[in-house]
Image 1 (cartoon, rainbow, N blue to C red):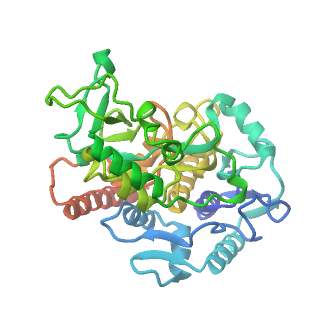
Image 2 (image 1 turned 180 degrees about the horizontal axis):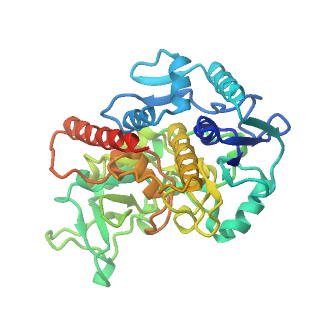
Image 3 (image 1 turned 90 degrees about the vertical axis):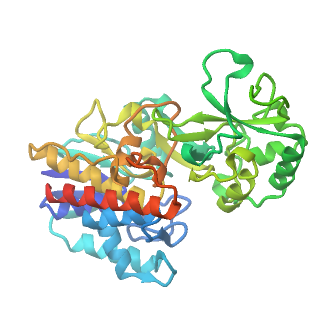
Length: 433
């Protein structure tokens, strides 16, 4: 079996390792040091380009649960992170240089590994059984054209500008109400009203909140997609004539007309997650939690993901991929990493792990592995393959898991229940590999 992996980041390196340890001949095509993206500076593989923290290891967090699942699956990224970690409390943080050097050394020491330095411009599988594309959010233009031709140019995006998502169970339904504007059509939205005083307090906090500083190569990217805080700074009532307009929305339980209304839209078919419509933002994560929680219906909101606006190349995965990260109409081609719409170091790595494992099993005449939706791994596989509404990138969270059978009111105990269930399911899955 011969596989070409394009891209030497977290997804590409994890895919290489999973294949190499199974005796597969692997060629990794990586453009460094011949050429670098604006975010890269090292010659080594699996470069940590942003924060050196891989987030919490605590099982009351989805990031901690994902790491537990990946350890059961023998992840190279996690094994090397453990060897190169630096003190960071409950988080797993690494010496970025030692981490990248160690990953490179491990792969180069494995039989069957070949590294080719080139700027790839083709997705052809000539001479290979499979190709795994894992070129990341800053994919070089030389390959973007080939990806667009393969997936369809309408299904290839270059910017990540999405609003926050909250879990349905954390919404205050005493404050929120379901209704369509002017009562037309079905009540597809949840509406979160504010009175005048609540709105003005929200407005003042929004325009003074801290924002993320964009990198130089991200400047002027979002001219056609205005952040909610930028809109607010154009005038105290600007939002009330935009995403917070109250016209035609009325809570029949109350006599008072709302002064402003935020609408929430279902993010999945099950209705366990809701999107804050029109709230794309560059606010820092902590500020999003603080400011958006000032809206009465979101006072106790749990954010499944925060809003982001940054340069990012990704495909409309549900239109293109199945749950194995395999292209539906080109079975010898797989995508992995942030190109597929998973976000984060570990999420990228696990997608590469899954793509490699599934490719190997398919070549060997075995059925693909079924990762249950009670695991973060399985939930991410579903995210990239299940069509529902507008597609947006996603990282790990408890909100993407299949709901628990029993309601658990205590938040910490509920999260631990999710984790215990997931680890038990993944342990059973691993035994079947």
